[in-house]
Image (cartoon, rainbow, N blue to C red; front, top):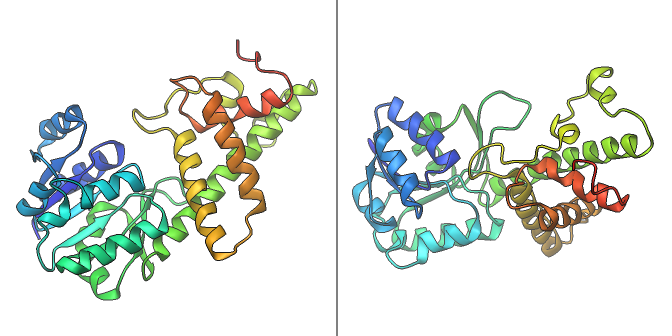
Length: 289
């Protein structure tokens, strides 16, 4: 397994590319963004014309895509992966999707004999580095272990599909909830005439500086936590609703993110822009103007 296909070479995909090249893998890359492919080629990848060519030219395929619609299109669209996957070929999906997406992807890959694993990734946990949460059979996990070791700093098999995605969505609920609570206490203090910087400066709380400065631009090009957490909380609530799981706090947080996403300017992709929603509730939308 020395040639790896990489579909999606944005922020996460580029991290994978660099790790794979450093470990002396050959990489064949595809992205719907031609400029992203050009950057991948400059780093040392070969370019493919579509997902099917990626499958034909490689020993294993890694997906690093925005969400469920992109994974579905990559698998089943014209010139999709399913047209060219070989029996026993691993497909590692690092995308955070609906849990049902992983279930269907595994079934579709089983039909052509390919070995699907879900492997959503996080780099925001209290632990340093990147960690993957793997869903899939134990045999497929063991067979892909060397590749997983290269893609991330640590990984764990959570259980069968979609357990890895379920765990990842739980992490997203925590990240988004904590950020929303911090935004609320900052606005609470400021609206009542108290300097909210004291939460960090005096108590040592890890509160985003962006809440104070109003700088809500994308933290990383092409990656906006505001939209990502809106998406992922939606996935979590949808899954919970189907299983009868109550998520009262996450429901409130998700509604705040949806409202903030609609209010944010085009260049405001950082999750800290959520504070604009709390400000709107206090008729204080001009604090950063």
